Amino acid sequence: MFAISEMMERIKGSERSQSISSAPKGAILLNRGEPDFSTPAHIQEAACRAMENNFTHYGSSRGDEELREAICLSLYRDFGVERKPDEVLVTAGGIAAIHTIVATYLNPGDEALVMDPGYSAYAECIRLFGGKPVFVPLTETFHVDFDALKKRITERSKFIFIANPSNPTGVVLTEEEIRGLAKVAEENELILIVDEVYHKLVYEGVKHFSVCQVEEIKDRSILLNSFSKTYAMTGWRVGYLVTGSEMIRDLELFHKTILICVNTVAQKACAAALKGPQDCVQQMILQYDKRRKVVDRALRGMPGVDVNPCEGTFYFFPRFAHKKTSREMMQILVAKGVMVRSGTEFGERGQSRIRISFTTSMELLEEGLARMKKALRELE
Image (cartoon, rainbow, N blue to C red; front, side, top):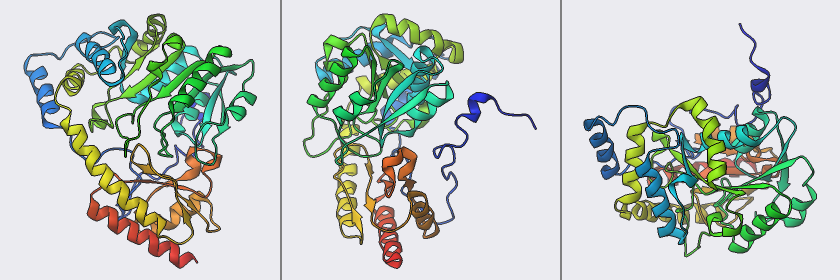
C-alpha cells in the first residue's frame, strides 16, 4: 500500500494514537473523556429550528456572528471580561483549535513548552507540524514548577500550552499561577495558550481564574474552549479561540483553508447553549460531584493506591504502588473488565498512574471500582 507522509510518521507511534479504542464485551468504561449525559433539550431544539429556517448554507469562516457575540457575553457573565466578536474564532472543536494555533505560528524546529503530565493532544499536534514538545514537570501536587519552566525556555521556544482545569490531573490552577505564567510569557515573548475546556466543572467552592482576566497579555495569550464538556456536546464539534484581533486574523487564515466554516446548525445550537438557561449545567455538575466523592472514597480504600483530590474536570489520576508500568496496569484492568487510560499517555510523569473518568452511571461506576479493587488485591 501507499507510504504515509512524514507528518504522520511523527505521531504514529504515540501512546495516544495507540490507545485502546474497542472495549471487551461487558467492560465498564472509565476511560471516556466525554459526558454521558444527553445534550440538553433546548439546545437540540435550537438546532432543529435552524434547519427549519434553512440555516444550512456556508457561514462565516470566523464563526456565526450570533455565536461570537454570545461567547463575548459569556466571558463577561463568567469573568467580568469585555471582548469583541472580532476577538473570537469559532473552530471545529477543541482539537481543531489546537491544530489551528500550532499550524499558524509554529515552524519546523520550534519548541513548545508542555506540562508533564498534560493533555496528550498538545505534544502530538506539535510533532505533527514539525515542532518539538519540551516537557515541563509539574510539582508533586500537579501545580506549575516555575523554576523548571524557566530552565526549559530557549531561543526556539514559541508557546506555553497548559490546561486549566487539568486533564488528566483534575487540578485547578490558582490566580497566582495564571498571572505567573502570563509574566513568563511576556518576559520571554511567548504565546500563552490556556485550555479552559473544563472551566465550569469545578467542585467544593474552587474558583476558576481565566487567562482572559489578565488584560495586559490579551495580545499574546489565547483562551481555548469548547462546548463539548460543559454542555455535553462532544459530537457537535464546536470550539473557540479568544485572543487579540490581529491574531484572530492569522488563525482564521489556516482554519478556513481546512474547513471553510464550522457546521452552521451546530453553531446556532451553541448560541442557544450560552444564551439559554444554565440550570442544565448545574444539574450535570451536581451529578458529577456525587460521583467524584464516590470515586475518591473508593480509591482511598484500595491497596497500594495514592490519590490527589479532583478539584475540576471529571478525572482522577491515582498512583499505584504495584511493580507495573502504567500500560501494563491498563492492560491488567482491561482484562478484568475495566477500561482506563494509561498515565504515560499524558507524559513520563504519568508513570505508575492511570486516568479514571467518572462519566458513567453511579451503578456502573461502583461496579467498575469494585472490579478495580479486586484486581489490585490479586496483584499483592
